[in-house]
Length: 510
Image 1 (cartoon, rainbow, N blue to C red):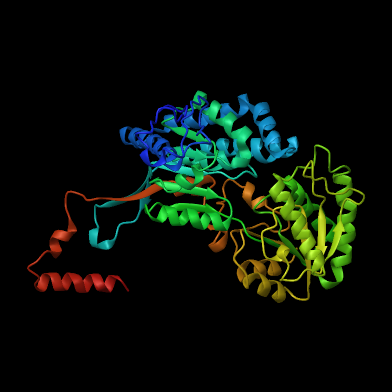
Image 2: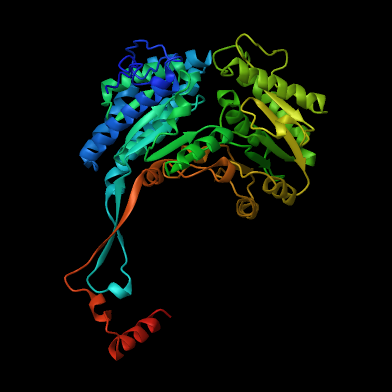
């Protein structure tokens, strides 16, 4: 099967159970499954692609260092040589995505990740020496050898579609694997562009990119991949994990949740507001690791409100302009409207941080809001917000904060603002989250030498950097037995000699 993924080669006889559902339509665009294709047709096409990649893997199960570097170089070329087209496609999918945000979070993020992987790859690939158990000493040696798992399925969300395509793909290729990538239905322009471009830079048996036109996702996670990476909601992640379990396919789940932030009394409120509002409103808040709710001490709430009211209008004098990103689609926009209304109906106070600027349904521009006096029965405190709305809670002691966080699902990130080292340690040791940035927001995600991943409801597994290389490798233990084996001395018949040796060995375990 070529990377130009078509369904016209699959006849109705080959898909007898979908005759009534399928209209076979020739579509020569790469990575496209006809929107009229039924489940059987989609499965046949995806299975053909998977079989092709698995066959290629079996022929070359462990690519050399030079091949992996070439693959990474080709990814870099794809991004650099088509940067403007990529930016325009993402902008078209959002309706409006800030060009600068795409450059910072997607283009730069991808290129820097490639640079780090390429620089580190030779070290990552080296066999790791491990000590030898005394029962097999002397002469034996242990090595841990990283070998490719095979074919990795990657499910990509829409909020950072380039970075979350290439972010996992970089360690997947660095580890010597192949990949099938399923894009989001909200990323139609970018997925069509990347599917067309990918075949120019990497062969289909190495990487195939699929556009979601309806029904692909339901089939994709049921395929017998050697590993699946999913980024998205917890509900969908649970479904992906259940589907993967039927094939005993290991999964990396990068989910979301409600990531808390707390500003301690000792920390400068203005500085904290400047830092957390930058990332909270980046991509209009449509980020899994952004601040989902904020704790400020009882006597600092008004100060924080005033700081926010001074900062946001200067940064976004016109939310209908190019700097402020649109909400991704009508359904997401309506959900945010309903979330605000629900909070208001239940007693919350809403503060529009861009006064005089109203919601723009046509452009899907939602003004940034603080939501005060929130209660746990409000939708805004029960669901991941994924928008420019910031609930603000007050607290009296750090124990109140810890208790509140620990009574809920473990978040993907946690953001304590304090210069008190003991208080920093208290928050880190008394809570659990996927990652932590102290005195800022989401900076840990940008560190290539730190793993990224959630825990519990916020996900499982890690990638980025070396941990990504390990995640997509089978770290295969190998013991090399020397010419002389000490085990020979312990062979039956068991007598006094063996008893003495075992007594000696038991003493050595003390």
